[in-house]
Image 1 (cartoon, rainbow, N blue to C red):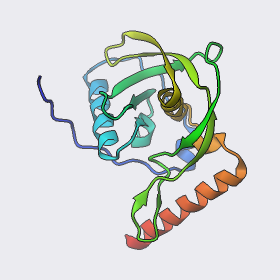
Image 2: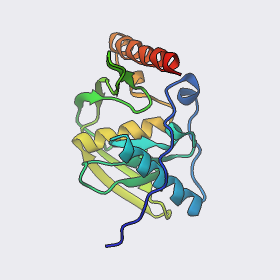
Image 3: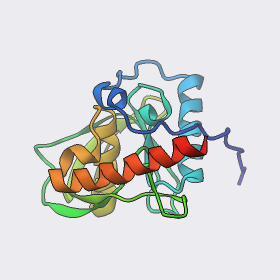
Length: 186
């Protein structure tokens, strides 16, 4: 088995209004640049112990996301993902957090806190792989949650847009404290 070195991880953009308001562009060109983006997403996700990451979180506004779940599996890149809302079913409520919305502990350690989010339990979805080949699949449970979370990023939606105002205020207060600590340490 050949072991391939990954490129240097990218910096993750922190949540702001620009990230929320900018839906991503559909990918039409499948080339080496797109493949490199996939590898950067992979190294960035691995370094940050993420379950997934979307291209806009590193400043690339194309419809590309990476999913890495379960942790012992190989990550896969989804290009132009689409969730079939009509055929997805069931409901699950579970915890979500985001690499772009960190907070810190009293000692200043960067952590992820989040909130419980309602999602479909079973989804039918499709995407193109890094070569442009169309793939149709189903996912359930946590994998379905991650695919929905990353697909939301590509439409300018954060998980905080899917929670009640009390939970959102709690998450945003923690995040704003993190940003303040970050600016004090600079």
